[in-house]
Length: 159
Image (cartoon, rainbow, N blue to C red; front, side, top):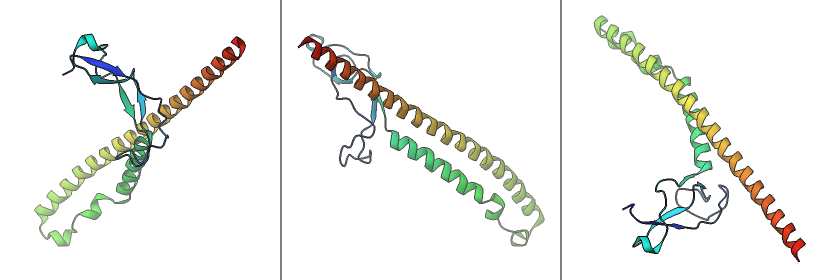
């Protein structure tokens, strides 16, 4: 399967370049990293072998949206306390069952608080990842623009 692979060139992509109604990308191209997209060929004599699995892409709007939605979910969950989801002492009506319900509530609350803390941390990290990739893309675009200007200046000097 990964025996013979050949590089196919890909156009430079901005994470914010419109692609129309592409499914799952909300009309935006993902940010791509790696040497190129790798495709299968029939034999080693027909192409160049590439490292499989080196190419990957980041869809910045999806990462940013995931971070935002995770943070919103944590805030929604924190607004509702676990004790409001369980029946009252009168509704339970039995002391042993009430004690078991309170033990369950305490454990559930510990787990829910841990889950909220971890999810909040993950949301913050995802937001920082999205910002880092956006900055990387901006810097790359600036460097490419600078290189283009240098080539144009060199070409003008050769004429």
